[in-house]
Image (cartoon, rainbow over all chains, first blue to last red; front, side, top):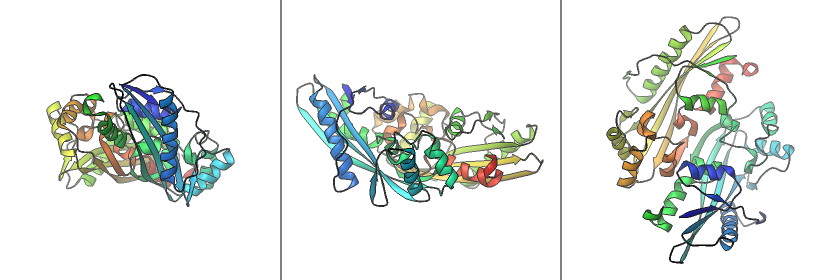
Length: 195
Length: 195
């Protein structure tokens, strides 16, 4: 089975590789500007758009397309990727000393060898509790370069781990793809023997 | 400040590197056969023995020695590293479909530039919930080579991530060193300016 990842994120490709799934990268050109009612609807909606766009451009059978989108939810609003170091600093200040939510939405579209198509979408939530950070730690981290391509302006798999007190949920979900749930959903969709 | 890690674990060295701390590796020759009353006492006791042994062999001042020990606690007993593939299989079967605890004990011994010595020990707990695994998944994973050098016979940072439903606590604690708590404790012991 071919696996096509509708995302340019090297972290998502790495997470798939970690559980033994080699994926082709095929970023979608979907505009990330859905503003659905809540974070779960937003990430599921965007993951669906990405997966559908890439599935339409993908030839052949026995192929699984994976679309994913991740946001941080804090103080009642969605935090995407920061547009500037100033914005990164503001985001990190919001997260410092608090618990926030990370939502990743995933859509799977599977075209079987027989030509039938099956699809499913889900959203996974992880709570992340951050230690209170000192002002110079916030500023230093915001300027480290690490926040700029990441939803919520931090990478739990990077230096920010020093400030994470605990999580509740799937860790890989915070990195960008909930591989535990994903693996279970793929088994359900594709069947045990095909994975 | 020099940082000396009293552990041969490449994963612990990597976790320190992730938060920007470069450590020298200096494994201790402590026998890992303490049988204290519970998992917290066991890992704290072993981390203390390791840190003390290495601190005694380490010259110089302005040096921090870190000792650490990790065990898995399931069904009322401690799981260390498996001695064989059969034992790995038995351990994984115990974890499948259940929640278990991972405990890492850490001891810090800091000798300042002035020659004073400070020390602290703590244990960090993370709950890990594993999806129900099929028999062939258990056998396949036990034979993959991944379990053999790991407490509880799995690596959450490896293929086993596919079977992890959720955790509650610090993820890096499950890998072998709770870098969030560790960073806070080092700030407390060494002082903000020295880290």
